[in-house]
Amino acid sequence: FFFLMIRRPPRSTQGVSSAASDVYKRQVSTQSTWGLIFCKGMSQKKYEQYYVEEVLPKDHFLFASESVGEGHPDKLCDQISDAVLDACLRQDPEAKVGCEATAKGNLFFTLGEITLKGSIDYPTIVKEAVKNAGFIGKEKGLDYRTIDVKSVVEQQEPEIANAVHVKKSIEEQGAGDQGLMFGYATNEWDKETLMPLTHYLASQLCERLSICRNEKILAWLRPDCKSQVTIEYKKDGGKITPLRVHNVVISTQHDPEIDIEVLRSEVKEKVIKHVIPAKYLDARTVFLVNPSKSFVIGGPVADAGLTGRKIIVDTYGGWAPHGGGAFSGKDPSKVDRSAAYYSRYVAKSLVHNGLCDRVLVQVSYAIGLADPLSIYVDSYGTVKEGLTDEDLMKIVKKNFNFRPGEMIKELQLKRPIYQKTAAFGHFGRKLPEFTWEFPKENLQKQSNEFSHKYLSLIHISEPTRPLYISYAVFCLKKKKTKQT
Image (tube, rainbow, N blue to C red; front, side, top):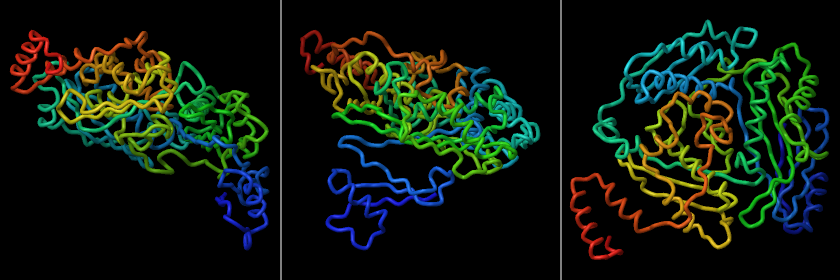
């Protein structure tokens, strides 16, 4: 289908279609400037007539998030990369791994730089990951037993190792690369997941499709799928509240024999209504299931896949910025991954402790340096009464340590836990292995700014460290707090 966005005219509706004119007239007395018309050609009978979007009340808005299933070609490559990472960490928790995967048709590649004590069997690992994703035979579109696996993997460059971790204690370990990472949390609908509802539901829909396929509730499903959920929100200052699900889109791969109307009905009843709470569905909610009708060929047979192309699916569904660095295939010395997990941990802890309703945390690094270059906290104006975002920053510095080695130690990130993260989201899933989803309790709310600055001096790892420390001790003795 196609749609036409039309804007309220400044004065007249002369020269426009009657349908558009009707929408214009509805909008003249409102503050909303946009109407939406879904035109003829939409795939489902219910929507073959013009569908006109209702004008939203003031301070209401629509927001959409999407997710993809484990059989999506890009997500399949994410799972392969993290399967390789887990295999390395099982042999050597200190392994340094940067592994990409790409796939098209029957051909799979693993590419990257890996340094570990031991060796791994790449073809076996790749085939097992493809099998776990559901491609178990030609009847599912791809047979893991017959795929061709090629690997181009070398050792990590010594220059990087020397800058980051060689001859350094865990406290002094530097960032594996420069970059910026974000964490986000919101209590807009619950106090456990603290995730945006649009993204949480989109992820849950794909996971439910996987369950229905594996447990043969809907035996005709195949592994590739996508979901998208749009919700109407109300905004009050920086606080947002989800009101209703506006529309749901699901495109799922399937066996050729299934009738399209049966597919749509079954997915609506056993997937959508199973996942989305009834209070968010109403008579106006639009369900678009397989709008393209046939979706028999999927996975890497239909489209090429590549690690790291679903970074918004992996995080917050568009609600938070993204630094651009993907997660999968990277060991925790890469702050693209560890600092993103830790920032989520920090954000979730702030909301969990009632210090704000929603919050964004950003951190940035330079390669080889342990201390972050910057930390930023934004509560969108939802900070607890009596506090400010500056107070939140002090609380963060008092309770959390963003040095790479400390983050890895606190969240236990050297365990082989990563393949589970590579499908259905890295955040908002309270699995025992996902330590970043268990917020820190009872945060100390009074920041000792003097102590923080003094510790920062001691952390200086340059040859001039003794001079800094000597001067700090001198200032301590003289009680020159500002100089210290």
